[in-house]
Length: 194
Image 1 (cartoon, rainbow, N blue to C red):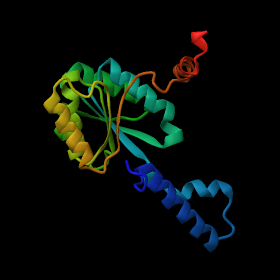
Image 2 (image 1 turned 180 degrees about the vertical axis):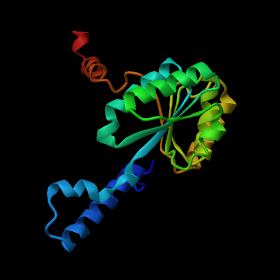
Image 3 (image 1 turned 120 degrees about the vertical axis):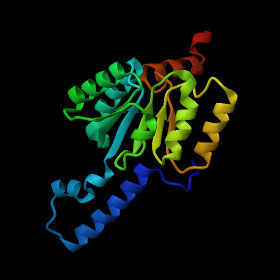
Image 4 (image 1 turned 180 degrees about the horizontal axis):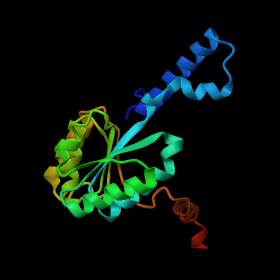
């Protein structure tokens, strides 16, 4: 993303700050607790899980950890295997205390108007094509690695991402973990060479 482009979250934050400033100037009696209400519910990011196996359970747990801080919601699960789909929905019900819609096919889930982002955790050979499909539907996406097992599929996904304004991230387990960052710093410092 170029430096002059805004992510959806930054745009919402800047817009909210502007609205807050106008509201303060119009009503000087606002207290700190009321500032949270100015933004409203429109900044909630509603997520769907595409693929409901073990990796998706990890995604659901990650969303739960950031649910309040990042204003995340969960609205759907999708898996062609009924058992996984039902298990994913039950886990979301338990974690988020809310029911989610269940879909067998991704095309149906991607038609949801209130779906903002999708987390892909399907078979490796499916990632690239599904990523292109999610982007084509105008949804942001987090996709597990590897992007692809086929060069043509990888190019398809790359072209879809580059020709869109969607936010996309590829997963790499543990890359942002504080322990891994510390180990990387130690290795790069040269302290192990001594």
